[in-house]
Each structure stands twice: as C-alpha cells, then as structure tokens.
Length: 411
Image (cartoon, rainbow, N blue to C red):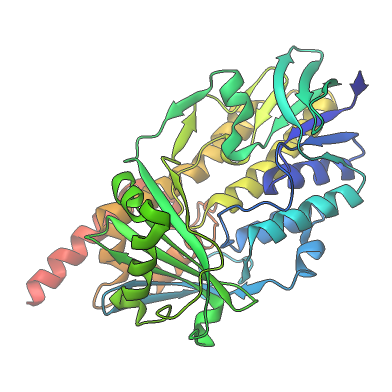
C-alpha cells in the first residue's frame, strides 16, 4: 500500500493550489483526479483576489505563460442601462486585474505546474471508498485500467468540485435555499467584438431579473456565451441540440447582433440545479475545499476564487495540523470560508431580487459606494473594513429602498 502525507482529491484550482502549497512546505502529496485532462469546465471569468492565492501557492507564473485574456472589470446591462466596474477603482487595496480563461487550458496549466513541483498527479482515478480515523486515512480508488488500489495518508483534502466525493460518501450534502436554476452555454467566434469588450465580462439581465446572459471574451477571438435561468427555461432552450438557445443568442436585442452570424465552437451544453451546500466542511482526518463545500450561483464569477481561497487556507490549516498544532477547524477554517460565502450569498440574493440592479442602475451612484461594491466584485469579501462586506446582509435592500424612494420623489 502506498503511503503519503496528504491525499488531495481533485486536480482543479482548489486541489492544485492546496497541493502546491503543501509540497512547498515539504510534504509528500498525491492528487487523485477522476477526469482526464484537459477537460471542459465552466467558471471561466476569474476575480482579482484569486491572483493572490495563485501567487502564494507558486502557480501564478505558470498561468502567466498561457497568455490568457486580461480582465480589468465587469459590465452589467439592462436594456439601455449600463454600469461598468473597473478593478483599478475599488475600495480594497489589491490586484486590479485578472484573466478570462478557458478552463480546460487553465486547469491543465495548474495541474502540470503542480506536477513539476513534485506532486504525484494521477488522472482517471476514481475514489471508491474512504476510511478516516485520528491516526490515518485510507482511500481505495480505481485507475484507468480498472485496477483498484489503496493509499494511506495522514490527512485528506477533498477538492473534488461537482464530484463532491466526501460529501457523497459521508452524507454531508444539504440542499441550497436558492431557487433551482440551470445554465446553457457554448463558445462562439466573436468577430464583432470591440477592443473595449475584450477586457470585461458582460452580463445582460432580462426577464425581470430572473434570467441573464454572460459574455466572457477569450484571447483567441472566441467568447463564452451562456444563459442562466430557471431549470424549466434552460431545459426548453436545450431541446433539439440547443436550437432555441442558438436563436436566442443571435436575436437577443441587447447584444446588438454581436453573434448574429457567429459559428458555435461546440454544441451547447447545460447544467441544472448546481446550487448545493454541506452540513460541515471538516471532520476527523479530512477537510473540504472548493465546490466540495458550497456552490451558490455563477452570477458574480465567485467559483474559482472560493476554490483557490479555500484550497490555500485548507492547506495552511493542514500544515499546522500535521505539525502537531491544535487547529480549531470550525473557527479558523469553516467560519472564515463561510463568511466569504455569506457575503456573495447576499449579493446573489440581491441580484435575483433586483436590489443590486436598483443600486447600480440608479440615476446617480456615489463613487465611494461604487468603489466598495467593486471590491466585492473583485473577490475581496473578507475585507470587513468595507461597509459592503461588513453589512452585506442588510446594506443592499436598505440602499435599494432609499434609492427607490428618492427617485420616486423626483418624478
């Protein structure tokens, strides 16, 4: 039986950040990844905050070499209304740009860089069972040839994303409070892209804030275009090879014919009911990170940032634990991660209620308010000196109410 210090389940951003950090601390680390890389994944628009996590884990340089599309902000549209946020104009002092990435290339670059650091990265290995105790953890997995193996370790970090290995094996999942939604998407050629459009993600709201479209430009001239709506709407758009989705993208008035004649790079794909949570983020001999913890909604592109943030923090906590320190996993890990999730939860709620749109599309928006919101959109959701982080659960509905009353009085 193979014996290592740490087994990381999953070779996505959370897993590679965690494994690379722990390898830098001198641990013997093995990654078990079920899929074959490169593999398609959504979550293509990063947030500036995750650049800090990539840098600290030693993976930033590997991503830089890929020459991905630079992202300097985000633009929101509702009919003729438009609000742009630029990461150079934010409250929190941090990174002012990031990338738009094709996840197949991004994740492969992270995995290869992690392997080059000396981590044993194993693809097409499916974890079948896990036994945990205070002293050792034993995983049984099946390789590409169908052979089963056992590996023993001192600690497990589950970064298995949508696969949610330990939540599934240990019955840790719990349903989300959000309305079940889905997404349908593809990559399109983007010959009509303006130079200004290259550096932003564009989000178009429609259907009374119940639905929205993303447009994420890539450096090769193509763009990821997706529609998020309720499950029934997405299923309807996906019928007959996504013909209704294709027609909607080409004819949607607010896109101004940008994709009218565009070629689709692959047939539309869809995911349904993606929002999910967990009962706990840790247990004896293991910790969860990335989408294995909780996934809210793609509206603010928070997925990869939570993956890298929780991946890095889980690795730091694991390092302390293995060195014999007493770690308060609830206070120092779960509560910290949950605080960030709760901030974005308030903004997701504000998006679908319309409060967020009321604020950003107001006739006038105070610069300080815009800068503070921009820092949230940049992923700095742990900066509690920012009022829009500290008071996240009340500030959006309260401010939206004030704006509505003010604008009504001006009529």
